[in-house]
Image (cartoon, rainbow over all chains, first blue to last red; front, side, top):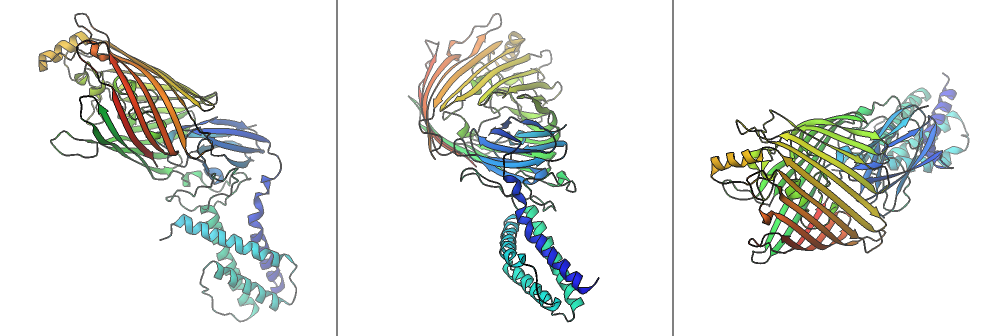
Length: 124
Length: 477
C-alpha cells in the first residue's frame, strides 16, 4: 500500500473513532411503541412485552417502592429506577432481531430480588 | 484503589471528551504533505494518550513506513481501550428526572467487547452468558422497643440481615439471606439466633419455567417473602404472619417458578415439612419449622403461590402449603393443609392490604394425646386455625417529597384454636384480635422509623392480654 493511502486510511480510522459517541441518535423522534413498566419488590408490571422485529420501544420505568434496576444484558442497558414518586427512567431500544430479551433488577432490592425479571419477546 | 468499573468509566469519558474535542479539528479535510499530516496525527494521538493518562511507550521512529506502523499500533491500542471502556461503562440513557441514574455494571462483571448501545440490535458476537448484573450484597436491620403494662420495656436489635448474591451467568444465580436475630448469640443460653433464611441457586430456563434449589422461603402470604422493614407498616410483623403463617418460614427444598404472562406468576416448591412435635396451642405450627437443620424430607411438603399483577398497583395472591408432619411419630402422620388469600392495592396516596390464612391439621386428637404421653403436657393443638387482617395507610406527603409520613390502621383477627378435635376444648386466650394504630416516617425510601400502639383483645376472662406500645427503626440497603 502506498504511504499516502495508508495515511488517509489512518485519518479515516480516527474520524470513525470520533463518530462513535454520536451513535445514540435514535433517541430522537417518536418511538414505535411506548411501554410503561412499574417495578416493585419483586416484579415488573408488565413483565412480558411482545414486539415485532425492528420496533423501537421506549421504556418508561417507575417504581412502586424503592430503587430498582433495569438491566438488559443483550443491550448493555443498566438503569436505576427512582423510588415511588421520585421520577422515572426512560430508555429506547430498537429490537432489530427476533428473540427473547430478558430484563432484570440490577439493584439488590430484597429477599426476592432474583425473581424480579421480565422479558421482551421479539417475534413476527 | 479505584474500582475497575469506575476506572473504565473514567477512561471512556476522557476518551469521549478527547475525541469529541478533537473531532472539530479533525473534521476539516487534512491538508499538507504526508509528512505534515503524519506529524499532526502523531501529535493528536500523543495528546489523547496524555489526556487519558497513558504514558507513551513509543520511541521516535524514522521514516514514513515506521511512523505509519507505529501510529497504526497506537490507534489500535486506543481503539481497544475505547471498546473495552464502552463495554464496561454504563449505557448513556436519558433520565426524565434527576434521580434516575445509570448504574455501573456489577463489580464482578467482566469487561465484554460489546459496545454500549441504546438503539441497536444486540451484538450477536457477545454471549449474554458472560454478562452479569446483580450486585453481590444487600442488607436490612431493625431495632425495636416493645413496652407493655406489667412487663419490662425491651429494646431489642431484632434483626441484622445480610444478603449475598452471585451471578454465575444471567441464567445461573445465587442468592442468600443470613440473619442474626436479637443481636447476641451465646451457646447454652437463651439468646438470639443465627439463621440462613435463604441460600439457593436459580437456573433460569425460560420466563415461564425456572428451577430453584437450596434453602427457600415458603411462598406463602404477603410478608414471608417480602419482609424488608420499610416494606410493611408497623414495628412488628402482623400477628397473622407470625402465628398462622409462621414467618419467616424457610426450609430446604427445590422447585420451579415462572411468569405465565398476562400478569400471572407462580412458584411451586417441594420443601421440608414442619414437624408436628413442635406445634402448640398458642403459636400453631410455628414451633415445627425445621429451618434446614438436618430437615427430615421423607415426605416433602408441597407449597405454591400464584400471583396476579395484571392491573396496575394491584397484586392478588393465593398460596398453599400441604405436608405430612408426623415424621417424628411412629403411628401418626398429621396432614397439614394451609391456604392463603391476599391482596395489596394502592390508589393515589392510599394503600390497602388484606390477607386471610387458614390451615387444617388432621389427627390432632391423636397428636395431642401422643405428645401428652411423651411430655406430660397436652399441647392442645387445634385442628384448624384461622387469621386475617385488613390494613389501610395514607401517605400524608406527596410522593415527590423526599420524606414520607404514613399513618396506618390494621385490624387483625387470629385464632389458633379455631376448631378442635373431639374431646379437646379451645383455649379462649388464643382467640385474639388486634387493633394497631401507627405511624411510619421514611426520611428515605429505604429507612423507616415506626411507632404504633396495639390494642390487643382475647376471649378469655381469666388470662389477660396487655396492650403494647412499640417503636422501631429499620433500614434497607
